[in-house]
Image 1 (cartoon, rainbow, N blue to C red):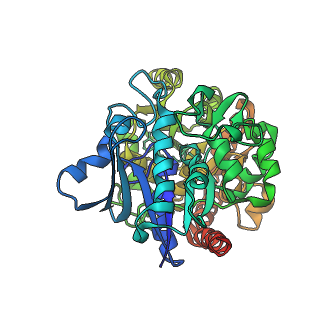
Image 2: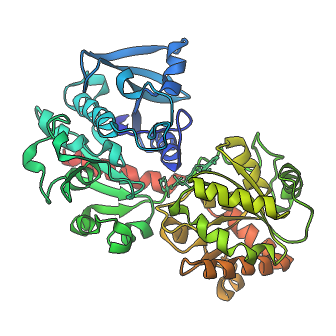
Image 3: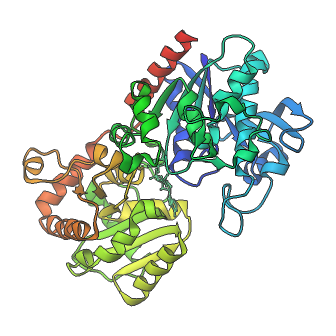
Amino acid sequence: MRQALSVVSECAPLIKTGGLADVAGALPAALAHEGWHLRSILPGYPSVMRPLKSGTATSTVVELETLFGGPARLLSCNLAGLDMLILDAPHLYDREGSIYLGLDGNDWPDNPVRFAALSRVAAWLATSGPEEYRPEILHLHDWQAGLTPIYLKQMAKGPVPGTLFTIHNIAFHGLADQSMLSKLQLPRQSFTPVGFEFYGKISALKAGLMFSDKLTTVSPQYALELMEPEFGMGLDGVLRHRRNDLVGILNGIDLDGWNPSDDEHIVSYTTARGKARNKARLRKEFDLPQTDGPLAVVVTRLTTQKGLDLLLEALPGLIDNGGQLALLGSGDHDLELGFMRLAANSPNVGVRIGYDESLSHRLIAGGDAILVPSRFEPCGLTQLYGLRYGTIPVVARTGGLSDTVVHANEVALRSGVATGIQVAPNSSSALYEGLKTLCTLYSESGTWAKIQKNAMKQAVGWGPSASHYAALYNGLSKQA
Ligand code: ADP
Ligand code: GLC
C-alpha cells in the first residue's frame, strides 16, 4: 500500500475536542479501502502517553536532543487500531488542562511553538526519516499543521511529498508575533503578504493555505463560503487566489460507532418507531415530563460559532408549542449560565454542562430532533448522527449543514426527499419560526414518519469522500 501521513493535533478515540478528531480517526480506515495506508503524527499529550507508559509496544523512530527547547522522541505504535507516530516532548505537551487551553481558559502562550514542533518533525520524517516511514503524501489538518510545507522546503534534499491541507475551521489562525520568526526557524523572506504574514503577524494557517499543493475543506458549500468576506475570516482573498486548488469534500461519520441498530449506549433500534424507549429513558434522565410535543436535543461546544445564543432567544418557538429541549454542552461561561438558568426556570428544558460521549449517544437516540443553529459550520457531524438515528435535524442554512439536510418544503415533502428543516437567514426570529415548523410537522404523524424514513436512508458514511481524497492523493503523488 502507498503511504500517507496525517499531521494532526487531535485524533479519536485517543484525544478529542471536536469533529477534527473524529475525522482524523476515521480517515485511515476509509482510505485503506482506496489503497492508501494513512499513519498519523500526534503530540504526546498525557492521555496519549498513558498507554505507552503502561505496556503498549512502541519503537523509537528518532530521539532529538532538543526540539524547541527540550528533548523529544518520536515513537511508533498502534493505538486503538490506528498506526500512530507520537511526538513525546514533555516540555511542550505534558501538562494538565485542555490540549489547546491552560487552566485559566486562555490559549497556552507557547501554542505556536508546540505545533511548530509537530510540523517540523513531520517535515523531517518526510525528508530525512527512515525509509519505511516516509510518506508519499502529507495530509495537513488546520493551523496546527500549517507550517509543515515551509519546513518541508527548508529540509528538502530532493523531491518532497505532495501536500494536501484540509481546512476544518478557518476561525483559528495560529498567530504568533513576528519576533518569533527565528525561534520558530521560519524564513524571513516569506514573511510577506504573499507568504505567511497576516496583518503583521505570523499565521500558521496562512502558511498552510499559501504553500500546500492542494487545499480541501469539509463540505462543498463551505468551500464556496470561504471565498466570501463574510466567512473567510480575513483569508477569503487567499482562498480566491487559490480557488483552482480548493475543493470541498464532505465528512462522513463512523457507521460502526454511530449505528442505531448496534449501539452499546442505547436501546438499539432499526426503525424510527424503536426510538420510543430511548426517548422515555432520556426524559427520565433529564427529569422532563411526558408531553405530546417533540423532544429536541443539542450536543455541542457552547461557542459563538454554534449559534446557541440564538437558540436561547428562539426557544419559546419550541417550548410554547409543546416541545422540550435536552442539551449537552460545554464552553463559554455565559452560554453555560444562560442554559442552566433556563433549565432552572422551565420544566421542559434539561441541561447537562460537560463532555460525555455516552450521553451524546443517548441524546441522539432519544431525541425527535437535533438542533444545529450554527453561524457558520464547515461540515458538522451531529446532524449526520441525527439523520442516521431518525432524529430530524433543524439546522442553519450554512456550510455543511446546508449540504447534508434537505429542507422540508412542500415540494420536498411531496416528492419524498425531505430530511430536516433548514433555517435562513440565521437569526433568532427565523429560528423561532423553524422551531414552530418542527412542532407542526411533528404533530402530523404521517409526514413526520416519512421524514424520519428519508433521513435514515441517507448515506452518511465515508465511501465517496474517501474516494475523492484518494483521487487527490493519487494526483499529488504522480506530480511529485
Ligand atoms: P465541531 O468540531 O465544530 O465541534 P462537529 O459537529 O464537527 O463540530 O463535531 C463535534 C463532535 O464533538 C461530535 O462528535 C459531537 O458529538 C462531539 N461533542 C461536542 N460536544 C460534546 C459534548 N459536550 N459531549 C460529547 N460529545 C460532544
Ligand atoms: C471543525 C468544524 C466542523 C467540522 C469538523 C470536522 O471543527 O467546526 O464543522 O465538522 O471540523 O471537519
